[in-house]
Structures are given as structure tokens and as C-alpha cells.
Length: 212
Image 1 (cartoon, rainbow, N blue to C red):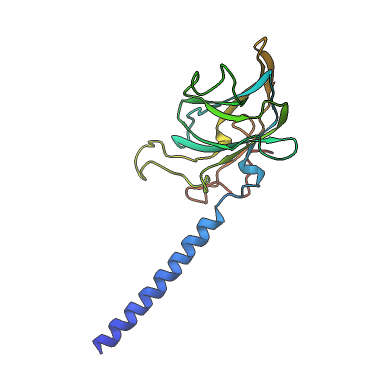
Image 2 (image 1 turned 90 degrees about the vertical axis):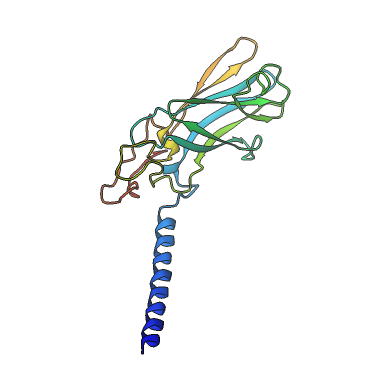
């Protein structure tokens, strides 16, 4: 009798565990980011690079409340024919810091990793190329808070969302070191994401953010 009861209990426990795992996976998928959902993107409509110019981008972490202490991003320079200028770069921006990105021709005598070892580089052809910038989250679930410990004061706990970062950039002409500014759409300057108090640790999925 005891053996039968024990077998029944083990069976029920297994079914419960399987169901719980399924629910957890479903919730994870529900809050996963769609790479093509404009709420989760930052874009710039124009960059260029040729034998006399390059593009420069600064990415800053303003260390505001609700931001994770580190936010990862992928930056891709897309050409006018929709092909990539070069391999996309991935980088992490820490609280209070600024990372620099250069989109530049191969063989540039000054703008290179030897002269600027802390920079990030997308290096392509010396021909004139132009296009747009697409910046995506590295985190698959930026709407879920990460870091810190529940019930204690915040220690880097927050959202790993690129739309909370600040972007600035410009097209620079080598000969005169002059140029013009790049526009960024969807970053912290114009994101309108709101938090859903009914959803512990996540944004409201109906809220807007990023490219509005």
C-alpha cells in the first residue's frame, strides 16, 4: 500500500514539474524581444565613409534609475543596397561610461585600433558608402530586470534596454575635421516606455519605446 502511494506521489510530482517548466518557458518566450519590433531598436538614418570621411558614434550610459549597471548592444552599419558595410560589432556600456564607435575605411592612418585602442571599429571599403545604423539589444529579455538582490537596495539592478542609453554621432571630414551631426531615433532622448506595475520585473508589453 505504501509503495503504491509513493509511486502515485512521484508520478504527480513529475507531472507538476513538467507543467511548471512548460509555464516558465512560455513566460520566457512571451517577454523575449523580436529583433524587428521597433520598440526595441535605436536607429540612425544616415552614416557615410569614403576616402575623405568617416562616421563617429558615442554611446553613453546615463546611470539613471531602473537601468542595469551594464547594457549590451549590437551595432550594424547597413549600406544603401541593404548589405552590411562590415561585420556588426557587439559591445557593453557600463554605468556612467561612454563607448566610442568608428565607421571608417580600411587603412585609415589616424582612426584605427592602434591609435585609439579603447575604440570600437567597423572597417570597410575605401569607396564612398552610406546607409543607416541599426542598434539592437544583446539581452534577449530586456524587459526583465537583471542584477541586484531582491529585498536589498539596488546595486546595478535594472533593465538591459538599449533604448535607455544615450547616443550621439557625426560625419567627420578628414581634411578639415568638420562635419555634421547624426540623428538617433529611439534612444533615451525620445523613448516613451512605461512600466507595468502589475507585471513584476518587466515592462508593459503594450507600452511604446524605442522608435516611435
